[in-house]
Length: 103
Image (cartoon, rainbow, N blue to C red):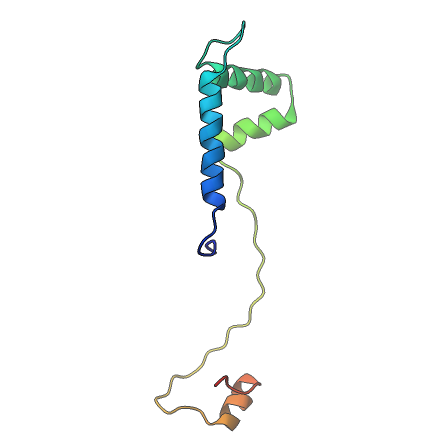
């Protein structure tokens, strides 16, 4: 289902992504050169995964293989109806659909 018209959540997410990208590019200290912050973070995640950290392992798997599909359960009733060029009477409509037709 698509977001309603006027929904700005995607734009906010893009702004956050842009801000993070800029901050990662600018960041530097005595151990990290400017532009290398993301590489250093990735190295830490890999190091933690190798040590057995479950969250790091899951993050790497999700980024490389993609997140697993989530099962969706549905319960629906499907009715087959015949199409006719003649409109139903009010009584036929109620007998078929159980409530009066909207006018």
